[in-house]
Image 1: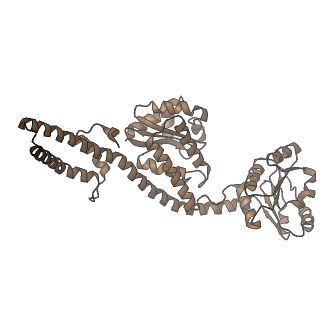
Image 2 (image 1 turned 90 degrees about the vertical axis):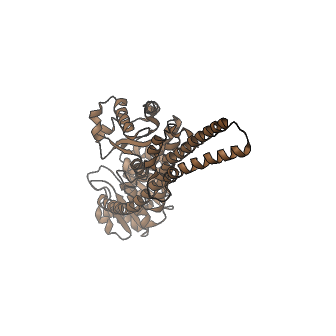
Length: 428
């Protein structure tokens, strides 16, 4: 069957200037996979390429030979000298490779523990391998299992359940204050990336409407159109504040743009209906004294970072449970891998002895010069009995019949002793 090998680098083993030089853009994956399959010992291959990791997974005839070939491929494909990158590369073979991919797919090896993007990126890599026909039955089974392990980790643990980004932490806090967000209106002050990300999270949470205000009105209009919201001129911001339940601000203003007196009037008009302010700006946009007004809640960037740190601690606690799931799934997949090598060997061994038995029986009957059924039956029975007794011990050992030995250790020995050279071709 061969050996599963993973060679790669990630955010811990290599700086970004090395990772970007070894990356595989999507429009080059086809050629790269074809080059990968041209390596002498490689029969299947998948390439995972993200901003934080590049990993090449192959099925190779020999583990260490395959590792060397893939390392050279990574350097050659990008026009680099192997010594310049080899120090940044890691490799995993067989069970270690299985454990590694299961952890990667489950986001246990990510820069941000539990982040959801990596599973989609691994699925993309699997899709490219299918599209360019570089994946076969072994890696297909391997990656499919990795996806099911990742799903199990997300279902049975909370490793990905709490916010670890500033923008999403704000939405999570809004939920704690208001509960359901479906009847809430949001005002975004600023039209930059932070506000845009927060808006996406809020829309996913089901908010009723979004207003966008920005010093450059055209940018407010553009962002509002993207989310089917309403653009507000910056100088009219306070007059529209009374309709906003949630205010998220991220501007480059050097001074407060919302002061206590602005919000005191607004909360009076709202008849004390709660308001939630998220200030993601540094310097702050929102006067912290606003937080002293009844039914007004103000969180600044430090408050959000505290929430994230707490959530990360919770994720790390859950990671232990997730790691146990991965270990149990590795053991399960190991049994399947072993069966792929042990079963063909058993079949091959049985077939070889059956061929010998049939040949010797025919030869003996020819010497005896008889086709008497009774004689034929005796000779056939004698030959079958000898073959079964000779094969009993090796077959029981290969089937791991309770003696505690690993059958995989016996496969190469049995193949060499009995000259079984047909590999896995006789796999059923």
